[in-house]
Length: 131
Image 1 (cartoon, rainbow, N blue to C red):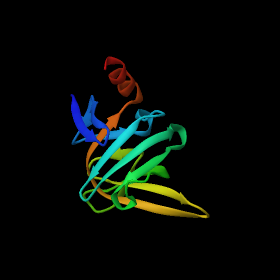
Image 2: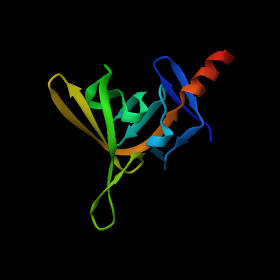
Image 3: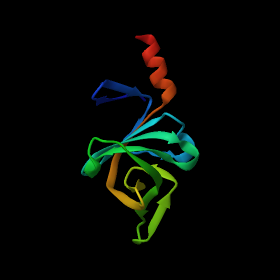
């Protein structure tokens, strides 16, 4: 599958785009970018440290200025209303991030995820070298 999404610097292409998708922590590597489309907003998570799920988050209520964030999990309700967690990002769920704000920790929970795009660092490098 081939997916295109736009950004301030032009279109980004990724073979990993699916509107009914999941991205596990094992799928995310250093310098990857995850574009998260939710019911109400769009977010960008640029991965710095995949082992600790650390990156820079922007979009939604955070605005355009990226902030240091930790991706904790995705939260979803099953058929009987019980909360389930998913170790990564999943459509239909809400992403949970913790942001470092000086001496405090801020919790950010997105609205339901409607689309995910994983833009691998290796894919971006190969696109740049072809131009």
